Length: 166
Image (cartoon, rainbow, N blue to C red):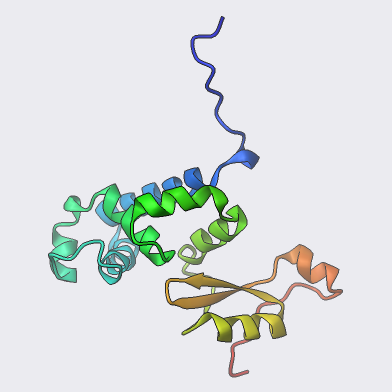
């Protein structure tokens, strides 16, 4: 008889809560001990969402060992439009996990061009024209390129999304 009936989820069965907790862990580590190029964008996000309010950005960077996982979770919740992590956690099981995965990928990969828009309606219009996908990030939005399978279904080879002025 097994001592515990707990079975870890398979890679394809990760829950939305687990995905957000994993992303919070990655962000927390980078903010607390990562290089400057990784830490500063995360610290700016913490300040922009008012998850940390008692320091300036240089002061927060100097004292970044004080950043806790709860600050990162609070910031992620506020970026998603919720007042607190507790509210966000209750809503997570009802959210589409593919949207959450895309949102996590928005903040990674600085070598990939991301087209940012000041509102979601402009991003959706551009995404519809260029076969991309608009993802809301706080009050702004970003357009991600269409997945290669979507481009193939449309009968076109995958290509980078052109800039809005092109």
